[in-house]
Length: 328
Image (tube, rainbow, N blue to C red; front, side, top):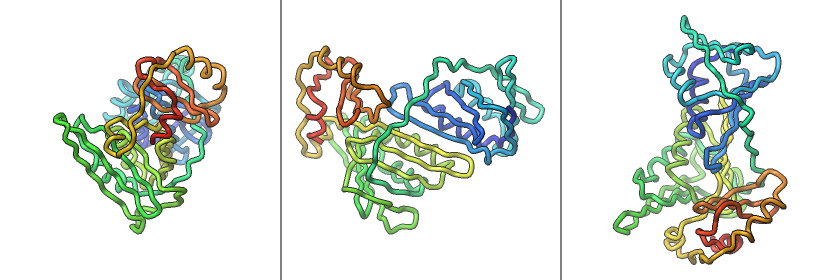
């Protein structure tokens, strides 16, 4: 394998991937470089591709799969150079190293065994609400609404046929609450609602989504957002001439504070026997999961329209996921 690529193209892909994991798997295929990883909590999934057309040269005899440290090795190495510097990369199969050459500098980088690196499964679910928006506009709205304080607890993304609204509920230590909101009308040039099934809301970890949007808007002009609301994951996709991104974020069960603020009934918490929960997980789940929710230490999975529990939920006291969904 041999390739020649500009520093800024490779660096932007690495900057996105390293936010999810320190060690990643790269797959070199005929159509470009692929990577798909989850964050350590399995709450976010990111899939990227650098198309072969984005490279100055790209020669590949067969598919190549490698593991590499992007936090302590590849990331710091790329920061040594300017954005238009040309990075030459080849693979030494005898020593199992990637050889980087930029100008007169040569770095032979040791790789990681990919045996234990499993490929995350892309969720399979139909999302009925979709809009496309300028990535910088989307990021700026998040940035203005999301509080940088640690006691921020909810950000709501409201979708309708006419606009999207960002609304954040901020809980302060003295129990006072602020509400910040901002709307984008569908009539502006950089925003297009493609289809909306029903008016719907998503509850997000505002600061976490903001970090990802900050990286996306550096590389991609327009982003497409798809969701079904509280009960479904959110999907964000986008592409440029040198990078394609597909990002999934699992839905979040709103906190009791949020339910109270929205005048919804709080979730009832009762004792649950752990033995009653574990059996359906091992016996029924045979295909990739459609969706995943987290509540404290609990993992809650949607499979073929049925919700299952996994993990130690004894202390969370959740009686029934259908009961939770009815409250939303």
